[in-house]
Length: 169
Image (cartoon, rainbow, N blue to C red; front, side):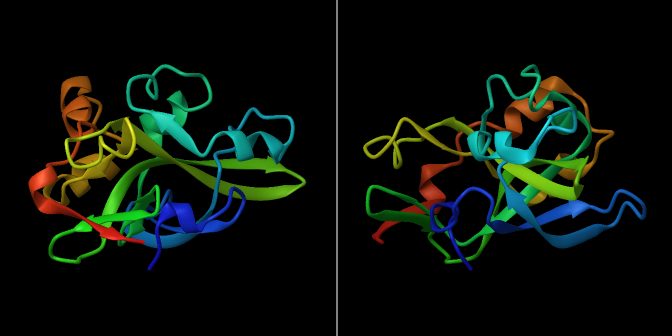
């Protein structure tokens, strides 16, 4: 398993999402760097790898995906300044993300990771960190019927530093 810092924009990342037809969870690999459905060409995706929690619901590039196509980017850590941040129990986790399907010269499914303010463990290395969705919130996060703004905002707050640790990368 990997961290987003191991990937370059346009490479694929492992993502859990609800299948648009069956509405069951599926693990797929999506291109990292969201390409909005309205984009003229896919090159915009290389600039849309991250979405800010504060604006993901309103920014044109992400708002439709946030409303209808949230996902979990599956990793075992994320890296900041030659440090890896991981769960103390070593288990993989889901970072909050959004995905989109672009149809141009063929079809491309792509995603972006949502970031929030850093918790006290991450803050010495960066002022932002990925949104980490708690396991008990996975179903609500993935469900496009979950539209309660307060609940979604709660899921996008900094993850508890008590459950995480820093290790050399």
